[in-house]
Image 1: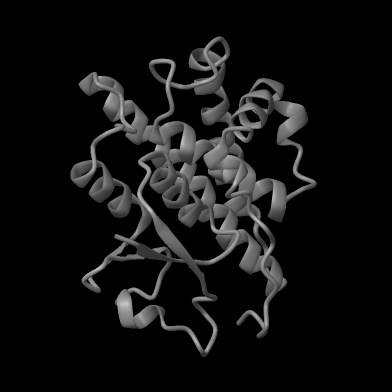
Image 2 (image 1 turned 60 degrees about the vertical axis):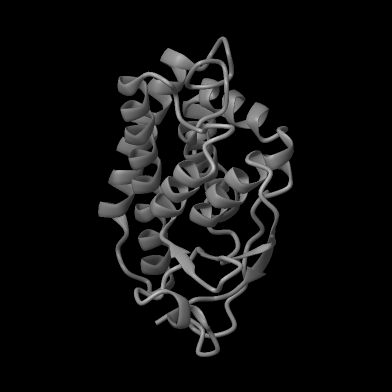
Length: 210
């Protein structure tokens, strides 16, 4: 069994899936695309024309990062990337929502800046999201290095994926100075093999962003 993961580098959404697949020891091949490029094959697999897309052996496509993670957790629950306790599982999902919300705002702000438009409303969302993520890190991860049960969960994967994305696309942002505990938490997790092998690299644009 070898699946194909269609990804845009340095997509934090795709990185979540790459990390989860490695943690679950599910083999896959990475295929890099630019979903807004005229040569993209993304619409063939996802009607919403968004990445990442996981292509299975039978050609079936599983898409949207939240759903792919849910699909993986349902189909391949060992090792689980969710806490055992129901309330903890819901909190892990909430942390993922906040981390992905920061990603959404950063992506919109990035394209707005490319178009020389005002990105302040999006950056307010980033500020609020980072503040919330840091509060969870300070409350839950300072001693163990993980947000739940002394082990890796989707909450850690989502949080560190957005922080890794910021390190590439927003290197001058001041979050590292403002939230030193979260920086230490992020840097420690980046040493984990599944994180170290998926460090994002900036993607160059072959066409103007419109």
